[in-house]
Image 1: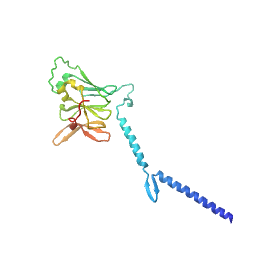
Image 2: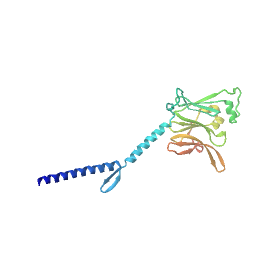
Image 3: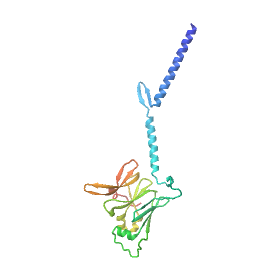
Image 4: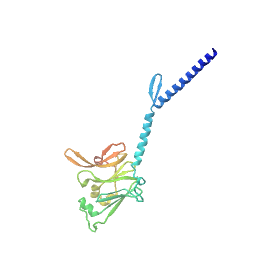
Length: 236
C-alpha cells in the first residue's frame, strides 16, 4: 500500500515538473516571438520596432558616410591620387587635397565672348589662363557647373558642402557686375539643409521650358533651386 502511495506521489511530482517545464517553454517561445500574455490579454513586445529603429539608424549613418568624397574608398585607383573637379569649357573648377580650397581657372577672352560682356581685352593673350581662389570653412563634397533657365545667363556653379549646405556662384551675374575677379566670391542657399546630391533637370511650365537644378536631401526630398537663388544670404 505504501509502495503504491510512493509511486502515486512520484507520478504527481513528475507531472508537476513536466507542467513547469512545458509552461516555461511556452513563455520562452512567446517571448521570442514577441508576444506575452498577461491577465488574459495578449500584448505585443515591441522588440521588432526597436530592432527596426536601430537598423534604420545604422543604415542612415552608413548612407550618410558613403556620400562623403573619400578617395580612400576608390577600389581600383592604384597609386593614383584624386581631387574633385568640374570642367565646363569656360570655367574649370578644381578642389585641392584638403577639400576646402576651390580654384576657378578661365581665359578672360573666352568669358567675354561666351557671355557677350564686351570687356576690354587689350593685352589679354588667347589661351592664357587666369584663376581665382575660394577658401571654404567646410569641405566640398561635390561641385557642379550647370544652368538655370533658357540661356547662358543662367549658368551657375554649385558647391555641395560636407555639412549638407549649398554654396553657389551665379556666373553671368557675377561676371557682368564684378568682372572675372568676382569669381572669388560666393553666396549660400539658407533654406535647404541636409543635401546629398544635385540633379540637372529639364523643366516645363505651361508653354515654357528650360533647365534647372534639383537638390536632393537625405530623406529623399527634392528641391528646385531656381526659385531659391534670389532668396539667399550674403557671401560668408
